[in-house]
Image (cartoon, rainbow, N blue to C red; front, side, top):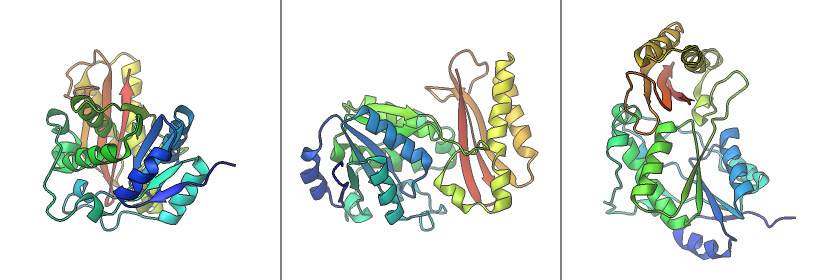
Length: 281
């Protein structure tokens, strides 16, 4: 029987518990309300590392003024049970006051990579992400950190930040976990009513349509973007925010697909904003 999972709140408690963990330590940062995608990250960390640390923190600085911070779903008791079953060794649940004490004024910004896509429509979002992840990395001191491919731009930004700031941490990006009908798992899926939930599959269908065209030889990025837009626009409950066919590393929009590329999109289904992506190898 393995030891029960330790649960700490303050950075002080974390610093006392951290030396008790065998290395290498794998780290999975989350905002809680865990689903199969998060648990896949925990299991991957479990396979590759001697100890696994998970954080649950709904980070206020990555939400815009009209975004869903207050109604973001939370269920700590259920999360604790799921993490214990998945084999996490330590759970850290800091408070906003712990992470951003009064007078807080230090920010970490990655410049170019955060401008397009999510950065263009959610100003300040990535500044909040990179700052909080820097603080989490600094406190946890992991050897490996695990992120999901569903947040592809976030993963690219964190890879770049880790390199630029010389963190001795390997960033592991794990495949998107999907529902049987293809919808990417997300805590925000709980906002969808039954009709919207059915309509939400349109994101994956649009991505697969463009992927099929690419596999059939289409290399014109504008054509791939148009194909995705047409599929989204065929769904009455969907409102397209952006579609993209960009270079996998720089995230710059492509004219022709000649190397690894990222198809991605943001779509409102009713009032719920969903993102998804696929990689063209």
